[in-house]
Length: 150
Image 1 (cartoon, rainbow, N blue to C red):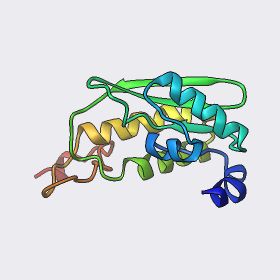
Image 2 (cartoon, rainbow, N blue to C red):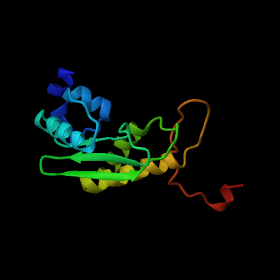
Image 3 (tube, helix red, strand yellow):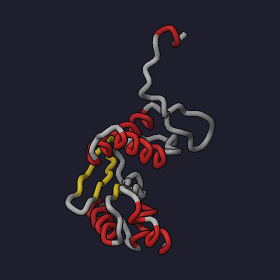
């Protein structure tokens, strides 16, 4: 873990750890939004430029909370939590969506907001494939022409 902190953390624009990953990196326990903010500040002190802690593991039935921490501010993103076993790939999808929005010229806060919205819609419109934990619906924002819906 020291290698990640020493060699990688300060080389990227944004890290997007979930709560268990953040707990390992910071050696702290996270049970609340305030704990997420404190842990994010630790990661900033360790060299991260910006941190988006994904709060899907927080004990909350109806709301999801993701927290963006920078050197200057923190922002809590609230969203509806969907009861779904089809959440495989949410972390990778979120970081890819944020990178995509950043590459389109959106600022960091807007990119995080839009990325979180995209992932939440992909969870909400899940495909319910197979047994166990299935994938999110990456195609949820594609609108098909009527001639393709036959």
